[in-house]
Length: 415
Image (cartoon, rainbow, N blue to C red; front, side, top):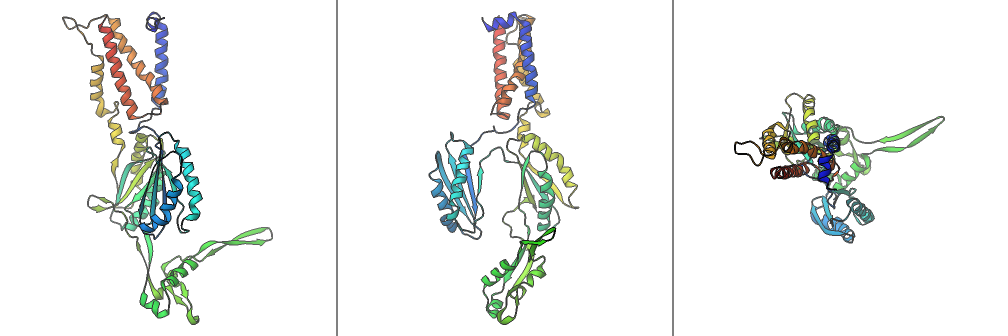
C-alpha cells in the first residue's frame, strides 16, 4: 500500500503520529547540545615532560629521543613530532583516524611507563593527555588594580580561581601573566672564597636542612602519636640563620655568604588590559559540557566574584567564545527578524491566481503549515541521539526544513 494514501485515508492515525513526534520532539529539543564544533574524538596524544634547568639540546638528547624510540613502534601510528624548549619536552603522537583514542592513549601510557628508567632521575612525571576539542577555553578574564603584581596573583589564585572552579561545567581555570612571591638566595663569591666554600655547599645545605616530613610514630599504652620533623624555614630570618658548614667548629650561616630576599618571581608571561598590567584567567569548560550554559553561569557569577575583591581592583571579561554560538541561534532576539524572514520564504505560496489569490483549496494549503512544525520537532529526537550535535546540526536541520518546505509547495501547486 502506498504510504501517502494511507496517511490521507487515515487522518486520525496521521494526527496521532504527528502528535507523538511533537511530544518526543519537545523533550528532545531541551536536551540538544549547543556548541561551535561537534563532539568528535581526534586520535592525538601529547606527552609533556619537564626537566628543570635543562637546555633544549639536553632535553632533546636525554628525554625526547628515548621517548620517540619507544613510541615509534606503536600500532596505527601516523605521525610523530616533538618540540624541545627550555626545561620542557612535548611529543605529539598522531594515530590513524580508525584508531580508538582511549586504546591509543593507554598504549602510550604503557610505553612511557616502560621508558622511565632510561630518563633522567630529576624529571617530573610525564603528563599524557588526549586532544579534546570540547575541553577548550571559552572565556578570558582580566584582573587589574593598584596592588603589586604578587598580590594580584595571590588574589587571582586564592580567591577568583576557586570560586570559578565551583561553577557547574567549569573544568579548569588557568592563570597567565601572574608573578607569585618567591625567595631569592644570591650567593656572594667573595664571601664563599673567604670561608672556603662552593655554591654546591650552599645548595646542599639548603636541601638537607629545609625539611618537613613524617619521621615515624611513638608507641604508648593505649595511644599512638605521629612524629613529624619540621625543619622547614618559616621566615626569611630563619633561612638566613641556616647553618651551611662548620669549618673548625665555627658555624657559617647562609646570611653570611648570601643575600636572602623575597619578591615577585621572574615574569615568564605578560597580560595587559589596555595599557595597564593585569592578570589573565582562562576558563575551560568540561568535555561535553554546554558552552552557552557554562558561559552564562560564569557571567552570572562575576558580580559575586567582584564583591570579594579589594577596593580598586576590577575583573573584566575580555573575550567570550559563546557569543558567536548565541548569535547563530534563531530564537535569540537579535536574530528574530532574520528567522521571521526565513519562515516567510518557507511558507509563502508559489503560484497565485489572476487576482492574487493562492491556487488550491484551503485544505491543500494547510498541509505544509501543519506538517512542518511536527517534522521540525520530530527531527530533534534524531539530533539529540546523533553524535554530531550543536550549531552545525541545527544549521543542517534548518536547511532540511527549508528544502522540505519547497518540496511541499511544489506538490500543492501541481494539484
